Image (cartoon, rainbow, N blue to C red; front, side, top):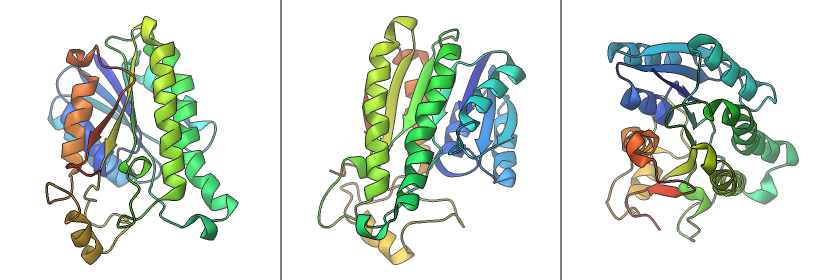
Length: 247
């Protein structure tokens, strides 16, 4: 059985990752901060494909939560093979309008959440099969143009995540753990979910993408599924983009 922990898995990319990776012989710990209903729907989708699923709630920005998630995965399923660090949010507030507390909230959730999750998970992954640590990054750490909104706090946090991915890939390669990041471009939100743009703004955004459309959570999940697979065992320390050609 392959045991997989996915953070931020109630909706969007996290939920799509669970659905894509689910099947007989898989077991998931589905994490969400507080959206129990969404997590239940994700868990039901996993079970419908023959996998096992349990749910856990917790704010990933709290220092004790990441280690608790790892401990719970091991307690419920006896092992841990794959961690997908997806929990986070996008904040496009300009730097001069964001106070320290707002900036810290992004760093605590995105960067420190990943740091603490990696610290807790890596010793367990070292005992796993085809062990994978995968961070969900973002185009906002790469695309800086006058016709594209910047996300200063999120860009800084995601860039930190990507640097840590590269460092950990080197440090844990000899233990058989691959560490990579997947960086989505503009990606559609689930209906009713919080979005950084209005419908008209999303339409304008899609016109900037060479492929002419927004990405979908399933587009991202397909790549995560490959990076997590045994076939990707020689890929580590990489940031792989799913962005429709956006540069």
